[in-house]
Length: 281
Image: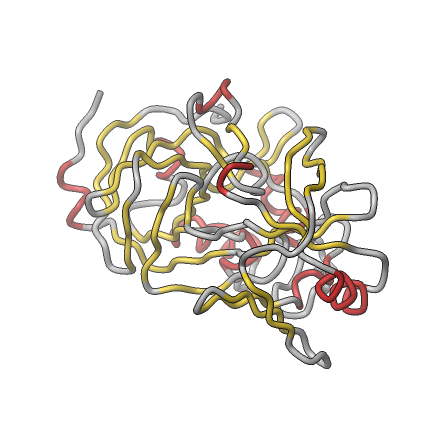
């Protein structure tokens, strides 16, 4: 184990994002509360098809134009050309079974108004569901046994560094918005992809563990303001040239948190234990 106390002088949180509706546009925050499932209300809503299969920007990039906002116990959905829809946190519908990456999960239907609004925006037959606290999912025990997650793909939060994004942009030859990677926590610190080695770290007083490098897909090629795919398949094409391990391309680190707490932009990040996070060659 290597302790890196000096890192607290240079590592800082620079940006924070939450994604109330899985696959929809994120909301930038100045501070973020973590509860049992991760960033509070992160990916607690999800768009599904009539058969319960989840919808994401992988197959429906237009989800990026849906902008959820939270406040005063209400979820507001906004999209260009649409009247905003405001919904209470408590779902009005009954229990439904949904499916995420081949695994079943419990949820509650939000209601017909939300279904109609989303179906109009996305152009199809869609439903909105909500995850109650008691419907939480377990994280993959092979990487993070004993933790819970919302409708996120597999882990409570995703971290990337400004330096990693800058290195990728250098290789692409143009700016790549960090939003393309849909992180919860962005840090600025030492050198590109240093986060690949953060097995244990703290942000302020809240402890975290890096448990798995994040496998990237064509969502990274989607403009998060317009929902349009990059015509050059960037940055995924350039990532594949230097961040491929066997058949997967990696960027950023999936993390779990240890207990409730709050982090803020500007908080110091202290790396407590270094070593390869699984997925690193």
